[in-house]
Structures are given as C-alpha cells and as structure tokens.
Amino acid sequence: MFCKILIEVVSNQRDMIRRKIPLMVIFSMLMLATKAQAPDYNKALLEAEPQVLQLLNETLLERNGQLIFPRTESNDSLKLVSSKDWTSGFWPGILWKMYQASGKEIFKDKAENFTKLMEKEEWNADSHDVGFKIYSSFGNGYKNTGKDEYKNVIVQAAKTLSVRFNNKVGCIRS
Image (cartoon, rainbow, N blue to C red):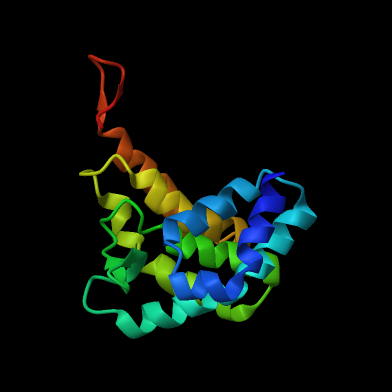
C-alpha cells in the first residue's frame, strides 16, 4: 500500500521538482519503501531519479563553504547544512540508495564524495544523532561497496556515541 502511494507521489515528477519536496520527506519515503517488496521499492527509486538528479544539480550549484548537504527548501531556495546537522547523512544515503536501485555510476561517485564529507562526524561526541549521520551515509556505502574504510568509520562512530552513555540512568544522553 505504501509503495503504491509513494509511486503515485513520485510519478508526479514535474510537480515534485517545481515544489522542491523537502529532502527529509524524500528520504523518509525511500527508507519506508525499503520495507516493501523489492520490485515496488526499485520502481519507486527509479521514478524518483529525476528529482534526485535535480536536487543534485541544485546542491552542487548552491554549495558554499561548509553548507553542502541539502536539507529542505525555504522561501523558494534550497537550504543547505553542514555535516554537524542531524540530517546531513540523509543526502549521501539517498545517493547510495539511488546507486543501489539504478546501478548508475553517477550516483555511486556522488555518494562517495558526499559520504567522504561526513567522515569527521565519526568523532563528534556532541550529538546523539550520530546514527542518522553515519549509518545513512557510511552504512549505505558499506552495504553497496563492502569497503573496510566505511566499516571502520561506523565502528568508530559507535565508540564515539558510547561516551554519551550515562551509567546512572542507563541510556545515552540526548
């Protein structure tokens, strides 16, 4: 049922591009679709391809300094964030998912580039959102390539996150 709705929404490509659907919405739809049957999931991803390519073009045009990861649209312009933002890993994750579905090297190349820009977050103990950042980017990269360097970043990020554990309350500080 969800994939049917997703495919219907994504199929309306012209409207999606014109309205610049927020990145988090696209990512959420793609991640939820993972639970669906593989043919519907791949179809949804492939139908999302024009939107992702459009967003990729806009992201590459609008990058400035540390603000390089698309997050949403605001006042008819793309809002970019740094790797410290809790949503930063979603963009490389989307690119990895697009590569997984399409096999197109452009998505792999861009996913590798944007994933590399996330690497310093493996040491960021200031955020409890390290899983969103690292697993979306490096986790999907590891699934698609099997590269040990990606696995090493995931393991280090988990170690970094573990320093936020509070023995007194028995959970990670949020």
